[in-house]
Image (tube, rainbow, N blue to C red; front, top):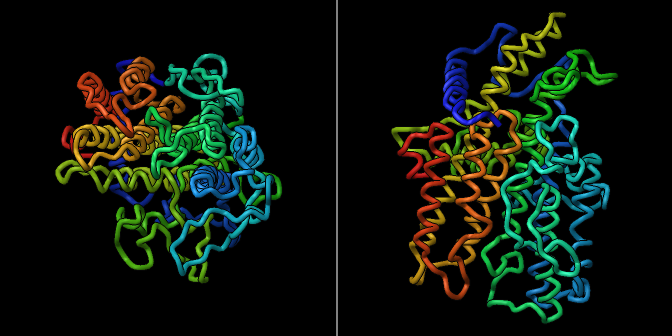
Length: 485
């Protein structure tokens, strides 16, 4: 993170660079293509199989928790969930082993009825897992010691940490993740054996104090794996031979150079389809548009299948479109366009340098990196603001028929999960001091949320408004967007 006070300069420079780049079709190193497609000798040089695998694993873990909850609430297979250990044993293989846990396991269903994906099981992907790439576990390029006291954002001992039901505040990214596992497992096994009270139709991934464990899990992993790896590893430039300092020479027998592959792996964590620029924001966000684009994917090569490695938009790239759509008419943001152009332009620089046999213009590449990463994080920051606004709406509904505890917990958990991710970017516009203040204001559960007796806590409402304004200041957002997202 940057020292307090530097964010304005960074935001101004990076955003200015993004808008300057949108004016032309090329750069000093070579023409920027209109899509993220790069070939050499008629063979694609783009590869990020492991990153796509992890996108699937995150979705699969969330889906598995929901499936277990539904089975227990439906009185099905209760003998499988007698103890917390049994429940956790269903979750940890996907986290620790990834697709290797069961190569024949069907991947999550990501397309609409009637459409078919080219890949169907984890055997169609590789041996990537989540644990090895979680912040702190892949520490070679980490800009902070996540396992040694630098992890910030959770101070309350409200998560279960073991099979005995002990609770503690997580001190590392992995202890937070495992805390989500054990908290869910304790509730699921308790419900299966009759020792955990179940409110009518309340999923077992909702805790009594208002945590939606599925939303926390998903959004936290998008930061602690995807965003961390993308910004602090593949696009970083602090370690020789890694990230932007990798050799721009062919990587063994592969058709790509090591540097090209590093850049591509970051693009895989960003999650965009190769022809992202052909979509409207509505189409990326699956909120409308052309019939063959409106679900967030498109059969570009017309082979009758959706290739999950190139033809579907995942995670961060979709989130950015949602925030662009929600921006105010007189203060429109373009997170999708800024990130997309920068990713394409940076990759073109790398490839052109290799073909010409020249050194990569590192300063130009860093500028494209800065633009892409800033757009990525600003979209996450805008999303945090969006969920603060949703929580304020939930609090407004307290006392009326429209209040929903599940929505309140969901909105808070999405806010918390996304906001925890800012610390993993070594060039975050948010200072360490402001980050700590943000999480002190948000807290470790939504104050006043309850299934039976919610309370509109005015002090907490004021804290959320302060947090919202702090995020708006740190990322240079227009006031119209801060209040309307």
